[in-house]
Length: 409
Image 1 (tube, rainbow, N blue to C red):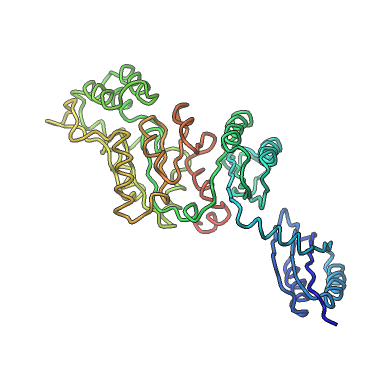
Image 2: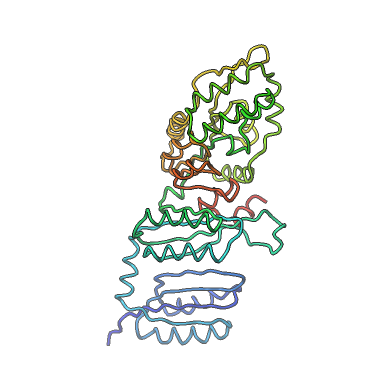
């Protein structure tokens, strides 16, 4: 008599130690079972292992009996769940459905954050395939390291209302002090190759033109114009010309002094090391000044710098600039140009900035990120980071701390 195939899901839980998975799969191998799916996770030395296998009806009873004895010997719990052909076919059918990655970033992970995210996912009729912690294990003494937490949800399905979903994410991100990234999973997400940064208030925690203005004794006037331009209230080019004029007569030696004392944004050192390690091309596209862009280029081995050039005569600033102004439109053009030169698909690019003049490049990049941005910029960017340093970008790319901590030490 011909035996029909059976599909059985086994779930194993217990203390994690070497050899558990090997011992259990050895039994399946002995009986020539087919593995249809397998997944394993370890949390605080506890193992959770799931195996979906197929075997003919005549052997499946013996397989389960041997697995039960072996689990007792290994001191782990095992459960068996038969799966019908209809259930299996429905599960396989889910494979073609849309996949999304939801990443949360925060200084500290709370149950409220996880509950809020998972509640919205369920409301939208989507299913969580996997949850992965990206940041390192949290020490009980929070002073041991800069606190940061990131968790990634792999989600399958089609949102009932994508706009409403993103609106709710925006709402709870403010309430729960976290950033929420919602990205469609694709090969481009895993193959980013070019990243373009704004400089002032992104790579550095200041606006260099404001620093120059303080030295020139016109700090308040220039700062007011800068803030209005970043909010998008006045034309960037006009504001740039106005501010340059106010710097007339400043000695160029001041620029070196400012460059050597630039306040570097949290996370930049680590981010640059990792991006270089994985082969990224890095560009600075700035409405600031070339002198300071070149200083950062040397410091971090950056590949491209495009910024504005101040005119100098007899060792002093003339109050004029040289060449075209690098404004928002020019930044977007430069991103496209560098992508072409490097033979990188635009969907493999990342743009990061904080001001209104960064929106054009943020909007055309494969991954556009508003970093500690003005409200107008944050509202118009698909992704934003406001809780962590610049290395929070690594979590949006799916990079885990544990891997990089090992690689960079």
